[in-house]
Length: 216
Image 1 (tube, rainbow, N blue to C red):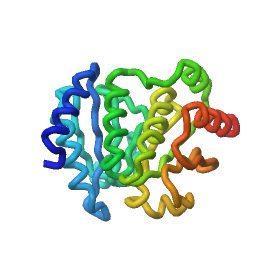
Image 2: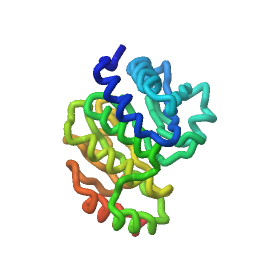
Image 3: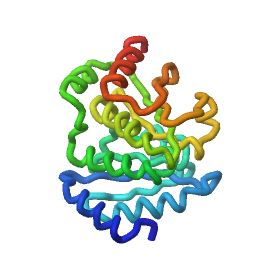
Image 4: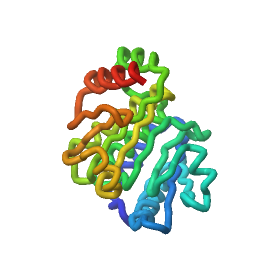
């Protein structure tokens, strides 16, 4: 058991606020993915805490069509979907563990409730974006400021189908992190063009996203 019983009870209580079903779709690999078995076990433990949660496990290579369907090309990758398979572009590349476990639970609750929790003004501005925007948030499990940056990216993704919000665990994907000179976390890279270091307020990320979208 990876989640202590006292924590399981707290999670059950939080999940009691879920209204709609949520799917955890996990892509694993037996090649170069030493953390995959542990992540799968963690996801199963979480899924067992609510009858509104379903865990689906696929192999990145033998289930290639399933991976292509939602644009997954790396393992370990977790996509959190609506109960009917609605894809909001919310991803966890690497383990949703350590401090990131909080962002993982928040993503589940947000999708189930159907509300991003963003300010009305932010929602209105995000609705005007008609170009694809990807927010890659690089994190480490021991970073206490990272979950808020990840959740904000996921909130933006939930609001607009053109936006994708990805958590990337830098130590599990070092080449990806090195490509963007990730020395401190969180670091949010927008469309591989612009970046923000640190956890920033909603309005700051909104300004950056709107600026990048206008150039796309």
